[in-house]
Amino acid sequence: RTLTGINTIYELQLKSISAQVGSIDRINEQTRHIYEQIKQEGLVLSEYPSDTPPAPTQFPMRNRIIVSLCDKIILTSYAKNSGVGITTMIALQMGKEVWAVPYPFNANKEINKLIADGATPLLNLQDLEK
Image (cartoon, rainbow, N blue to C red; front, side):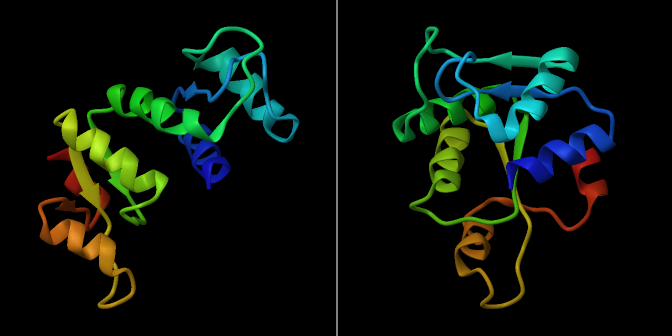
């Protein structure tokens, strides 16, 4: 999931921004090496004060920060009542472009419905350059 995205970012040598749930001094030990690398080469931020533990209720607020830093969001999966669904609604409320990778017929009805409802289908990477 997120680790794959972070690894891809580093392979492309892009700078990363990490918006944390909880405070930036409360890092998951399993991903500390990624945190340290982003801290050295990019930006780590949180809107929570020191020593605030991560909590599930913080994810929508963290996703609001991520969306606000983006021009567009790209969905490779979608479920209306999920974190991705909440993030998509935040993006639409902010007037951000929402792109979605179509799935084969009946494979992911929700993402295909999102495209039918107005998300831009992402058919290849060159589409993003338009």
